[in-house]
Each structure stands twice: as structure tokens, then as C-alpha cells.
Length: 399
Image (tube, one colour):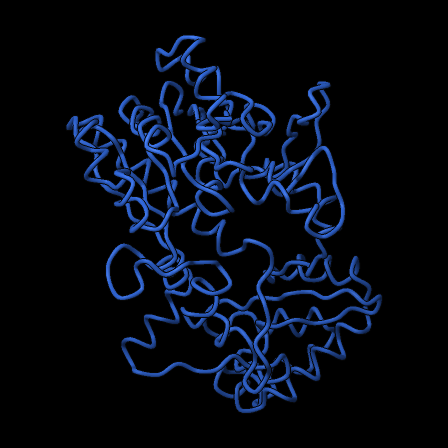
């Protein structure tokens, strides 16, 4: 879908490279500018005492890209980045605004060289306000500052961390969407624009339904424990063989009688304590105990059949190990084969980008690059000869 478009990615860590990976999977040529020493995520496993040829965390965000190492603390390095941007369709960065301005790689500077450039800035908190230059990480900007961490935990419990790059990759999706919208406009008008994505704003949108309630009513209910759910049919229940099942109720009272059939307690269908949503809320402890008792009589396989037979929406609460073997994950295209960086033609399973385009090549376009693997190639494409490239390598402006 994006074949023929060139993206310059001046970014490290997860969120912005994740957006670049999505664009690469969809066909764009993505040139990744790395600092001397490389993107720190290349050392993700080395940091914890292991070292693998393939790095599934780095590879997930960087497959199919070209890598060029540039020392942007030098004027020569900055000029290389400006030259790359002048010939690109998209410039994607997560460098803080102040540093970009000082090096002449801010939006206004690059758009003056390339009026059609779509310039995406992905930061912790956005480009305006007192925290515009504050460092952003998803556990801080997406998870903690937005209120998601406080609202997610049941009342009275301590905060806990979100999983690796969860907020980053949510923000990757929003950045990729914003870039694509701006590309449509640029193709129509011949003018690019600034696209501003942030962990903070994306986190607020991800929790938008609750935030909308807070903004409208000035308050929000706390998250309840499993035994305090005000809609008891929408809850988690454990089967006889130890599996947890998530059940979901539709609006109103339509699922009470079917649930009674699922747990083999049709005698409760007309019990006035449970026949309305209000009554079930008032007697939530009893309802949950009854459904607990019912689920405990059946195995996962048995309760699955009973839920389907009675049209109750449900899903298993799976481990990632179970998800890795879930046939629906493969059928939906959510798992793809990524070429190994070993260069031997082997592949391994990895998560797909978030959207499928049936009939199109929407998967990985190659392995993740070795650090600086494409430096010579990219500089040659800029019109530099071998002597110029050798001089830049010798002076460590590039690597």
C-alpha cells in the first residue's frame, strides 16, 4: 500500500520505531538513523546477561528497515539527516523538541527544504506546555501520568507496572494512522504537515470512555475486585480444571436466563433477586457465588460448549504460551514469519502489524538490519562518491 514512499526514522527505543515498522510492513522504504553505538534496544537481552543473534524485541520494531549510523552531534552528521529528509516523504522522530531545534532538524527547518514532507514528532507529552521537553517512557507518560495505572488497579491495591512497551505500541498505531492521514493530504495538496503523537495523549484516548465520564460528571467509579462486579455476568469465572473464562453481558437483561442454563440452574431464571440488572447489582455477591459454583462443575471444554449453545459472549483468559498456539491467532494473520537477521534464509514467528489487507503483501519485508548495514548504500543514493563516504567513515561522522 505504501510502496514508493520513503520514510526517514530518526528514533530509538519502541514507540516511534514501532510506527516505522508498521509503515515498512505496509510497503514503505524505511531508513533508520541510529546514533553511534546503535539503538539501545539492540542491547535488550545483553542488558539482562544474554546475547542472541536474533533479538525478537528489536526485530519486532525494526524488521525490513535499512540502518545508517550517523553522529548527529556533528555539523556533517546533521547535514546528512537534512539531505535525507529533503528527499523523503516522511520524517519520523522521537527526539525531544529542544534537541531537534538546536540541530536544525525541527519541523520548520526540514519543511523549508521539502514542503511536501510529513513530519511526525512522537514524544512523551506533546510539543507544547511545560512538559514538552520532558523525557517520555510508556510506564510514566502513557501508564502513570494519564491515570490508567491508578484506575486499572482495584481500589486499595498498590500500583504495578504495565508489560513491555504496551503503551509504546499503542502509540505506534496512533502515529502510523496520523502519518497515513497526512500522506493522503500531501498527495492531494502537495503540502506536508506536522503530525504530533504522544504517549500521554494516546493513553488518554485509550482510556477515553472512562475519561469522558470523568470530564462529564467530575468523578469516576473505582475498579472493583472480581467479587464486587456491578454487572456480575460480565466477569471472570474459573472452571473445574482451573481455567479462567471471561464472560460478557449484553445491555439489559437478555443474558440472565441463558446464563442460568449455562450453569444448570434454570430454577433461578425467575428468581426476583436476579431477574433485573438492578436486582443483580443489589445481590452481586450471591450472583457471583452462584455462577462460581456453576462453572466449577464443568471443564473448560464443557463450559465452552454450554456458553456457545446459549449465545453468551466469552473468551478464555489465556497465557501468551496458549496464544502462541491459538489457531485463531494464525487464521487472523496476527502471527507472521520474520526473516532471521542471521542471513541464512531462516525465519521465526513474530507478531504482525495491527491491520490486515487481504490479498496484499502486508507482512515483514526483511530482517532487522545490522547496525550501519546500509550506511554506504544510503549515502551513495544521496550522490556521494566512494571517497566522500570513506572520509565520513574515517572521521566517525557515520559508521
